[in-house]
Image (cartoon, rainbow, N blue to C red):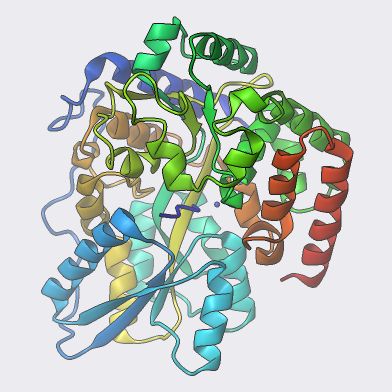
Length: 459
């Protein structure tokens, strides 16, 4: 599974959402999963069974491309099946590879583009528009988009004032998941600050369990680690400047963030398998090895977004009891809130493709996948009660309550060549840094060289 889920339009204050999220997750510690059928916090909007009108499309055939695999792909196919049922169209899911822009380029060059693609980066949407692949959203899709999404989420899918993307999937990427039994045995407490996190890690280590599971084989989780530290420590204005390459990666703020990261990445005994083991660990395994083995797993904590729950579901651990979560701790004055997402973008402008975009912009589609778990929607009209457990309900409520108070994943805003390509750019440079966390200056030099080349070419 890959959940790269990103802002062009951003806001200055992080504190309200961070505080709300912290409070929401604190509530889940004692709520278990008993909130399934009602939203105790109030304020939920419950759409009717069917809120979007779709045309009859008997005989129409559509292809939808996405990088999703495993449970994520299977759950999305159930959403597509509902679209088929309502319209009479036939929809085929096309598995794509990273980077999806390159995959789409080869498909388009061969004269076989999919009708719709799920793009995981604003940079990819912009590139699809620049290449004249993407088609603007039609009036029905725009109506659903404006009715169901905050302005910030609308803006991320807009290029040059024209809306192209429907953000069907969101991610809260400022979460650390932990093995509750390990924390209990170690006497460790949920941390609120970076220093608290180091203290908890030491307690876990002293109890005989390795503190962290880091999926270094995949470059994208490493960029997410960096972004949370950098946003909290350097602040939102610097974050925006670095995201747009208005300051260089050789800036002292980057040095400070990498040095902070090295307080964990540089401790071999704090990483499951050490640095070498981390570099061989892919994301799904980083989660499952944290929640298998009872109170003696390979690691006590794993950092990543709300979608971690999909992989926890592959173990015997129960979210909210065996597997718990806390907001990424404050490194600076405020805890970070980094969001991501995947947007539906039309590549073949047809009645059927526009209808699918309209459906994906509606609460109908998102509610289906919300009920299946491991998914978060930025659609504000999806009922909170649709999410299958208290943890997801609180995370969803916090996301919607935030409105436009978030920062989008920095690497997803970057040109694909720098922020979204396996084995290249930021992904590779941070893998090299994980291998040798003592070489901060060397990492900065590599990052700046690759960023300058990618931003300079716009690719």
